[in-house]
Image (cartoon, rainbow, N blue to C red; front, side, top):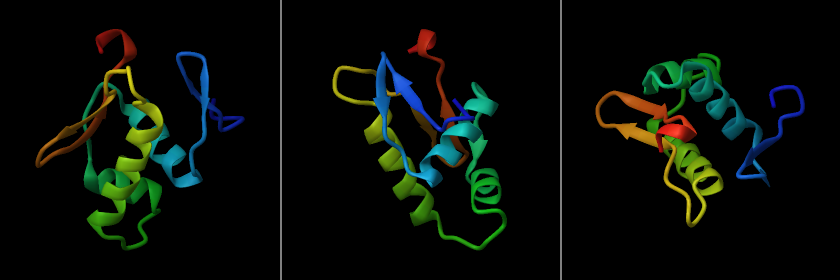
Length: 91
């Protein structure tokens, strides 16, 4: 929910940082298309220079929050391209 910044999966409310929520928002908006690393960095960090390790760390944390044990991963890495969010019904 973009208005309340609440995220849930299977009825469980998840806790995300603002940055992780912003990354998820971009992935949701573009789903099921792949979002390039550059696009994510540009939109989330608003053209402030960052390094790829920072984005990877946020993706890692976002995966840990969303893809809890017993659930199939919804965030896919497309090596050399970027990331994409797979719709729940496609998981």
